[in-house]
Length: 506
Image (cartoon, rainbow, N blue to C red; front, side, top):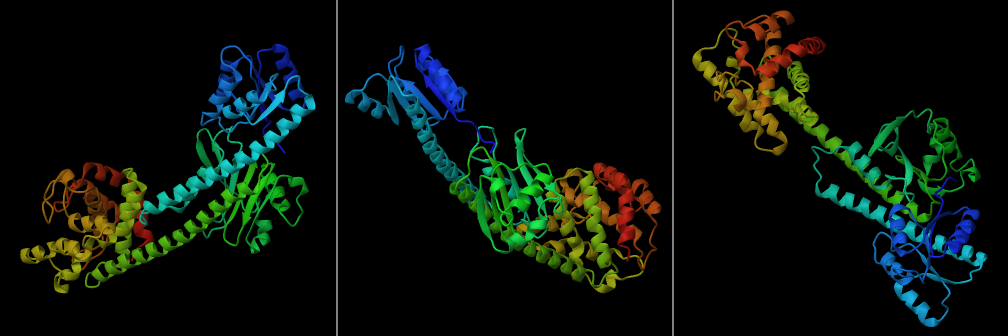
């Protein structure tokens, strides 16, 4: 297994002792760092990942007792075992060493076998301690994330994928020194799709890469029938019934597995690969916490999606009801929403805003529910009195929609979709930037579809004629009615608007 080599810091003011210790440690395949005094020892701790300190007591400058106190008094190093190597064998010296924080003592002249035996014991102890601390840190980080997610939960902005990324980011290795953490995490089916994604931390950020399910692990899906957690340090010794198929398939896509922890469930699978140490049951506790949060997010995501679907359905149903006495159709409602999306994207507006615009734009004429059918369906030109009544549909729309925060954009659209950039629109004659961006966008999106659509009082125009009316004017519709930037975006996206109209033609 490719794991990190333990590093031993040897501190002694006698070069011969340092050379002897270094040779002994290297012969046993340990990495040895040497320091000739206490100050150099403290510097070495900052520069290297030290696992055990072999510390002479009698040294110039600061002695071993003081060095040990500083090590144990520093939050970064306090868990590193310290072995004091000394010629002093009296009880008082040992008590002083224990008070300084030393874990063990070796008396000079030391026995080589004893030194190695004590190092092995302390490394095992430190490994268990590090695993416990790492597991605690991992579980604590995931718990904190869960608390923050619940505290800040917003169903409108909930994104399952980004939340999963955040969870993985809490447990994956960020630096080479994070040998207690996995180098790779692979997740299957956090949602209802059959997706596999591989996560790794590169160049300061979490990278998520899709894996072809046919190449990855689908041949092993029968193993998911009963949920279980498992870990293994010796992949060569795994049986065919355990995870060898996964390991073989991972190798097929260029992933060599040194050690592995996995969870296999009916709806969710997680693999944590290539820790820089032997994995233990403590590491499985961290992954189990990730699994629990992943399953919670999956359930939450399903509920959010179901609620969002119902929300969109109600919006569309209300918009259709508003058109019941009008000549407009459900396809007009859909086309206007799609038109808004195309223009908003061209303007570079945020993705969440664009999606909200798509969903809520259909409510722009909801106020027509309060307009008499004789006015809505009149074949000829409206009288001034009738037109004044028609204008009120913008006000009625805001009253119907109300003040719910999820419908803020819809309310704004209903009120301002007939306002004009030059101030000649209604109901309030807003001008320029006083008109919210959603009102400026839907004004031109609705105008395009209205010109294209046949009505009892006019034929439907073709695409070229409609674009000419909007960009050059025809007396009733003029270019100065539109925000210049929105008009420019319309020109850039006109072909897309034509495609939308043809695809959703009545």
